[in-house]
Length: 428
Image (tube, rainbow, N blue to C red; front, side, top):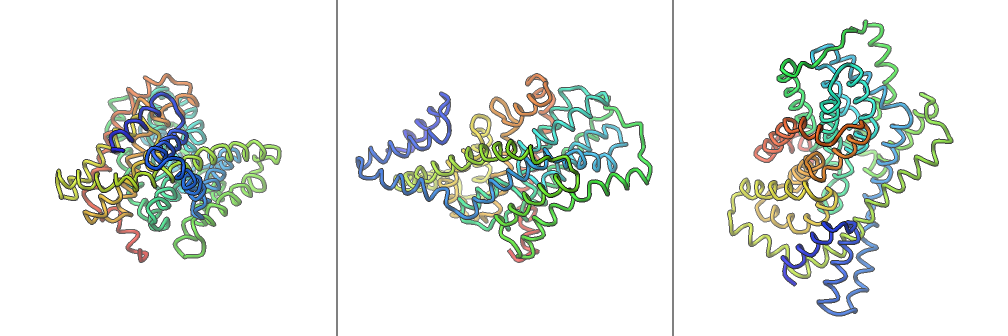
């Protein structure tokens, strides 16, 4: 069966509203049946099972749980208040606070949607109360939330590491500089447009004592990345163990230290985390037999030959891949893009000598941009709901931050050192 028939059938199923996992499973089973009759369906079941038995994938439910515990346990409010101490007084200060808060929150949850749904509520409410337009407040919240899965820890990096057989620790380290660049690029845009947009500034200047008290109050939340990333760097824990520690620590801080997380809240938090985890892992399970089908049909080889037929220049090919991922991100959810495309794209980048860690950061940043591009930008819809702002108002305000993020994407594509420098420092 040709690559065109398989991929067009898959996209058609997705566009008519078929859940991603169901669409992947149907295409895998259908292609197996077409190729060899019902005999291959035993392999479908085997691959489906092995698709979610990777040890590293256990990190996903625990990072999701950690993010939900932080949102319920009062950590997000304190992170926002700490960011406000440092950058709240400049013009457009709460916009800068929004970005810095997302960078701090990124070191804990690893999820853009968790940032939007948790920290975003606090950020949008504070900005509206300070006189910011609702559409602008929601747009900067959606844009800054994309930093979450690039700065470690990161759920997409865990998934990519499993698909590409790449060290998750190396991917976590590789995301540090690009994540900081994302934040800096947005803060530069805010600084350049603050006066023309008439952005307000906070009138209250916190005293040294107030600022110190705010930071000390948030300190238990702020040191959480030390346990997650520090343990990985020192080789004390695996990514999965780090995720377990993050969830346990978030529960302890919420219940014992801040006392905002009640025992009665845990069933709802656990249920929400379990539901979100199943949605991700179901996609991963269905992607495994689909990937097997692609390899058996020699589709990755065909794509390698087609791309190398256009150019053998690594930069040209990476730009082509960026364009494809950005277009797909406008219509398809990011994890689905990753599990569908990686079996086809990884042989291409291997052939042209691109480091898979470098490529992983490029892929994840592409997918994060997809979260804030219409018509199917998940973070756009999430922040629209939590902020109660019309989607078109957000889209009108967000385009300039899209340009900033695309600039960072081009930088890390052209200059691999921005990605690989930190991993190299730690021997990866």
